Amino acid sequence: MPRFYFDLYEGEAMALDEEGMELKSVEAAQVEAAKSLADMARDAIHSMSAKPRDMTIDVRDEAGPIMQVRLVFDLQTKRGKTF
Image (cartoon, rainbow, N blue to C red; front, side, top):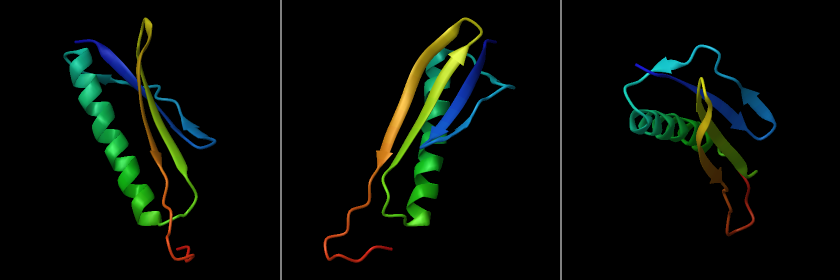
């Protein structure tokens, strides 16, 4: 099975995946990236920060980049109160 690497970026922070994960296809890697991004978004919601957060996962294999999955989380209050 091919090995895929999932590099995480959130704002200025980054975590490069040096171990990777064996998955059966690019489609399986896409699903894994989407699940990981959903987990990152869930953490952002729990922090209740009013500051916009840009979350990105770059997926690559031994040959190089394959895809990028990205989400921008932006909480805007309507009554002037920030959490």
